[in-house]
Length: 109
Image 1 (tube, rainbow, N blue to C red):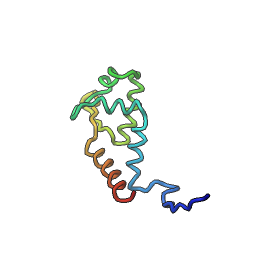
Image 2: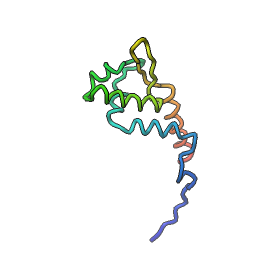
Image 3: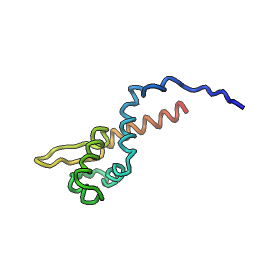
Image 4: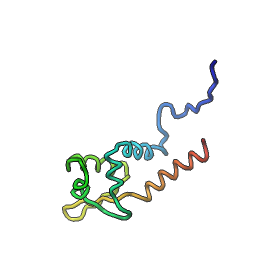
């Protein structure tokens, strides 16, 4: 028995431009190590690579690689102070992204 499904085919080939930033966030947070890095931040806290590597099971160079991906996805914000780079969670951006996802779920599904 076959069931007819009326699918939205508009997005079968490309993610819409307004969802590009969301896709990058989900891709960045799809890795368990990057999730642990984000979860290591206390509210409002700034950490540097050394501090994150210290509490991680990963090598400093690997932590740096994950931080780069999180920064490029705008999950983390980086600010250089002297020779040190400090990272913090980009809470306003993440609230916006997850708010967009919630609105989509509420309005379209």
